Length: 296
Image 1 (cartoon, rainbow, N blue to C red):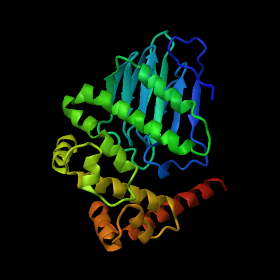
Image 2: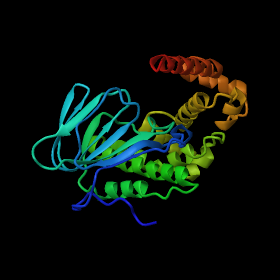
Image 3: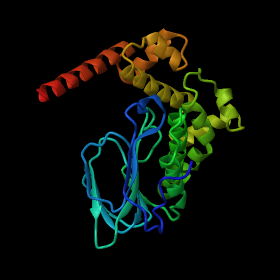
Image 4: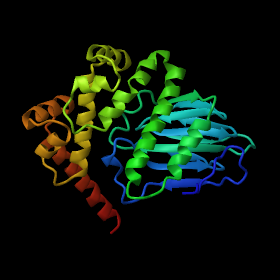
């Protein structure tokens, strides 16, 4: 398929681009996906109050000013920002140059777990890989496997961002880079029981060595890390599937013993899966009722 969208680098024909996810695409069914991606050319002033998802923005050209909550940052070409959920952001152009930015508004049930450092700015010396990967996503053919393929590409994009964050913020985050094959395996096999040996095989190291890497990278053991992923996936299933049972959620997250799953879920959230589902359904019903009242 011929590319529909062009690179904003040294291309006078680039135009403003905004792609929102299709209505039929449920982003919460995938580990990582997007609500919107785009190129601002020129980038117009943006204000978002309490954004829901991790938001990545990269300055291609021109100059801008960024505010994350109460902090102020100067934006120049090659400066990127990664803003976490529940933050308020605003940014605008400064000066007479054309201000162009590229952005990805990440979604998916593991969107928060994918990024360990947020509400930061960092410098990218070579922005070409970020532009190339963005264009792969923007120009992806919308066939029957489009959702899965875009999720894979966005996972690669998140890894690219995290690598540059590691170099910029915490040099010892090299351990996270070493664990990438294991992390990729985990997010794509959440329906399987935890298996330390299988996980270590993804890295060609022993389970003991793998455990040390997880401790250095995330300050927790691989089993604990896996539990967090599975519980977050379970929460997403309960929120987005009205008819799903607790037994089905347990099996979907790799737990054959439902009682054990309920115990783990309560340890992580403070309530049972059934209570969590009812609480979410009550909140959804309340929101829908409010919307109906406003349209009367």
